[in-house]
Image (cartoon, one colour):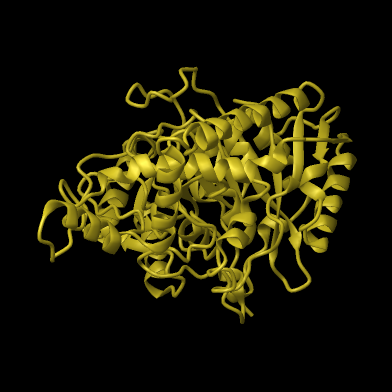
Length: 487
């Protein structure tokens, strides 16, 4: 099955080669026959009605940039009148009373929402095995059941499985980049504050950021043009002028200075991934870039700092799910205290409860300074390291993940092994920087390998240019999972 990009779909729609109703119907049919479990909910009637309206708008001369394009949204984004679960039993029957800013902006640009994608519960996970609605399958699994990554695993699997041309996701510690790497896609984490968090159910408020997953960097740029922008309803939103992220895509890379952080190439990195990254570096050198070895001396502390800060913020954010105001409530209780305890015990999954307990402990009296305050100081050191490097280089490059997609269940009983999947992505979130994962090759057993690109704060245009120029020279992003290949 040949991949069709957003750019190609939009051209087909513009020139009347296909209608939005036809395109939407085709993708809905694919979703209905899929066994990936990539979606939690699908809205065929609403989607087809929106597609019909898009066709009417186009006939009337509308110039909306994404008019008639079907997409999906991670089920962490609220949509008015639509079930929004966050992959949790506690929100299984919750209907959102308002719509997230990111969803509104994409809708205003003309997109058609097909449904809500599966995810690790409350975005906590690296494999999409933590969803109350079941595991998501990676289309690249072939004969072995492999994880799509997390927490935006449903979004990545849906795009890789060609159930939708693009999807929104989120990235708190690597949740768009790691699934993109495992599924052979382009996943872009914008700078913290680029995309509004309004209507995006919070996990860790100082780290969460909305993000697109697509087949190409050019497609990601097209989505980001509509996703980003200042929002007064989000106090962390950056008040800067909107920009066209496609403007620099075709600018040559002559003179580009690439830094290779030695901390991203040490023990634990799969040899095949190291080789594919080295091959990618040669492509960049052929395009006029120069390469220097650099160091992020405090990167080794990132994982420990993250797993204090993120659970602490999650403990605070998830306190609202108590069975009183909305969401699941236990059926059997004798008093208020028992109702709280049983509701949260029954409503949250094991990983979420683990992180709430860690976070509550880190914030408790006598431990705040020893853990949370110290982790924030480490966070500043990591950010300073990045700032220092970007005085010397234009972009940092390395692997996205230490391994390719692993099999279902192989790390479920070992939280530390699971957390180590994010060892290369987490430092970026702590510093609030933009980063992307693009496919740079296949392993010997035919699994995608991700290349991570990192640029300075608010330099998404540079990030996307560097990614796009690589994709112009290679065809890794055009490969489809063996399960989708037509004989």
